[in-house]
Amino acid sequence: MNRLFVLWIPAVALFTQVALAGVDLSQSTVSSDLERVPAGTVVTVNVVLRNSGDTASEGTDVRVRFPHNGFLVRIDDLPQLKRDDIDREVTAVVEIPARGEYRFSFDLLASRKEAQHTLSSDVEVRNFLADARHDDVFSIKIGSVPTNAGVVIGGLRFHPAAFWVLGWMVFGGLFFVWLRARVQWIRSNPKSHHLPADVRRFPAFGIVALIMIPLAFLMVGAGLAWRDYQTLTSWKETPALILDRREVIRTESRQEPGKRRRTSTTRTPEFALKYQAGEREIVSSGFDTGTTLHIGGQVLGKAAMDDWVAGKTIPCWYDPANPANVVVRRGFGGAYIFFLLPLPILWFGLRLLGKVSHAVGRLNDLESGVG
Image 1 (spheres, rainbow, N blue to C red):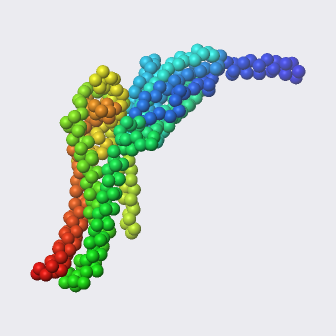
Image 2 (tube, rainbow, N blue to C red):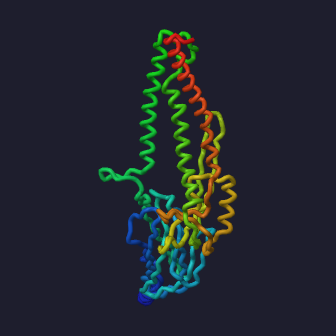
Image 3 (cartoon, one colour):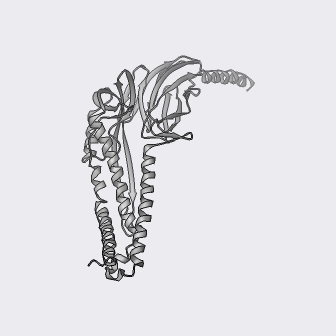
């Protein structure tokens, strides 16, 4: 019995030594020097695949998954590199020496449409024969796109749209005060009984709302139309290399009382592009202006996703004032139909305003003895 025990101890030691001499990938890391980047920024991610074991990790599979809120725009030329745009991942096969490491890097582009979201990418390394595996996730916060537009007052930057909103509010306030004074004068005038009864019941705030709200919609539509007009007239055309592509899927659910829930899904493509803007090489993302809804947009988007693959060169148009603003579809879209919907409301409000003005003129005529 003692002899068997003596023989068993070296066997256990030998088995333990062989086990410890295997492949260990648990010390692999994925990192970047940055913790937060503005939208539209390219981030370099460094990957260190470490084998802490005593056996070389041959035939090690590496899988890099593309980010959901951005693009993979560059990766080192890894051995047996394969790219899958449908599953949005890159695979490769590398060898890591015993107690050694294998280093590579890749660049991610934070989408300009995903400010205040997170840019992340998953890196998986596995050796099937040694049953060794390690997963690590790179994640970084996407900030707002920096801009020089607007006016700086007291250390704060005010966008030009803020002045339009302020002007609209001031005009609306003055319009309300003026109209309320006229309506009150009609109601308090001794000869107002000569007017139709409905004129004396017109609410000043209601008339102002019927006019100002549609005007706000039309102002927004005019701003979008001006941007689309600029893409056709002043934006510069240049060839662009497609680095990556993704499909942005937005799902909205609405449920009205007593009715079934309605779900609508929109699919919009977005492309990571590399192009020359003068003497500068720009890497940015875009598709259209992002503020228009093209008639048949779903069909156009699907056609673009099917035909425009990574590595293909297509024409693009960029804003000379800010070359990172780029589109591959330009022109006026069908969204402007929606901005025509408030026109009947505006017409009704102007009609009520005309009745108030006519009533004021009628009272003036009565007081002066005319008619």
